[in-house]
Image 1 (cartoon, rainbow, N blue to C red):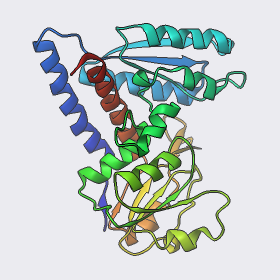
Image 2 (image 1 turned 90 degrees about the vertical axis):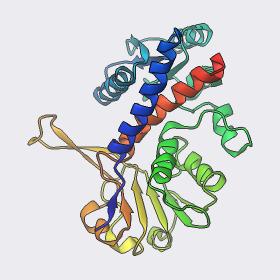
Image 3 (image 1 turned 60 degrees about the horizontal axis):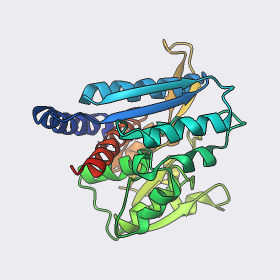
Length: 291
């Protein structure tokens, strides 16, 4: 059986480390980091994710500021709120929860965020810094994947890393991070890739994040591969209290028999994304206050 890449455990370790740093700040009479969260509308999944981020802030001793706007808010008015947070010296970092209503441009809102406070790592400046010698704030989910591999001492240098999914949020930045920081040879696959399995079967490290449950089956994975499942899809399940269950992109039960390491869904990359958000907020605080 493979070793589970337990994101929940590692995220807990990271939270304990951050809590200790927060306590040190308090002991020196300094204020603690303050994360602001903007959410627009009443999307159920978005509110679940935001509640998780608020709980994480509380668990490490961060302050937080929640700003909830109706789905009818105009793009210009939302950007005005973003600009106010940019100028607020008591806010160290903030996120704008996506998705946003159709009449609001995610790109325009994202680029309105001051890069120093962009703790999601979405702005062009932070994104571009991945391939520089002076990296700024890294995208939270890719950062979480890289940190999970690092904390399990998984060798990436010289390994063949195949990433399925080329989104701006996960696959594209992760490909650059695995090349720059991991020194891996990276193949980036997407919906236009022909004969996907011919690529995935060559992977020493296979990372999948497209939101298509069961996309990766056992016959698509090399023996001994490390498999990281970033995909998270809500599947209706009336037997569950929530009314749904979470499914990954990897057919876990059959693929696990061939792997050396594999992430579960849930409990793998998800907790690491929130832990990375906390790390990014701590970095933003320290960068702005000389920590």
